[in-house]
Image 1 (tube, rainbow, N blue to C red):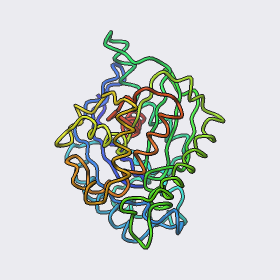
Image 2: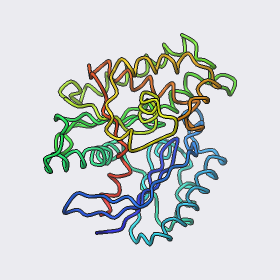
Image 3: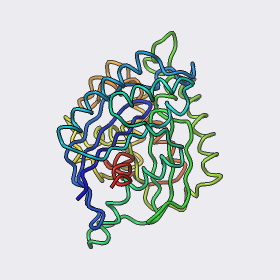
Length: 318
């Protein structure tokens, strides 16, 4: 076993996984997994820069995570930064802050690298289940990671065959189309929803140029927008990763939930029991991205995975 720590810093959240990894068996024994919504990508789409308050929220989470890593004695750490820090002019401020707190330089990875980590994290366990004679999921897989700034699409069997990253994350779509006078539409107007759909459709056209979406037999959905929709579909009173992991959510249920979110006020979305406060403003856009993908690909359902890019980063360390 190798004790590793992995940090995934995205546009909306920063997450930590400390785990013991056994490459021979494919087992990843989770010791600590946590998430903080820091909205690092606040206004990046508009300004091209990381806001000072967003950096400070992120550094506060890094200080917390440094303590957890010391507590568990993880000797190997990899810190991966994704969409927001790729786009920002002042990303060196971010890099210096992380190095000062954690002692490692954040790797600002490409969209293709992000896609590969997501695919490994989401499918390694599926392959292990298959090899162990347990129920399997039909290949090839289409792994979709709906982040805050971007969404990754990966098609593969035991390894990646094709991947593409496009800028249709839930935060980016919200800030681009739903924010007026500093406030998110409450609820969004038909015109705003139509504008988001047009952006998503154009992005899916780009994806289909290089990724054979329609060849996939199992759609695997990752990240907070997908898991939140799943939690609502399952009627959970509180967030339960064990219940959500590998749940199959039918297309019609995703369509119904998305419609409800798009016609709800901020207060109504916040009142949903499993809704994280940091997702209230962006969940409608995230759900619409998921629904659009399912409708484009013809997927009858989405298999929801709690294992994602964070697990893929941990495996890369091991």
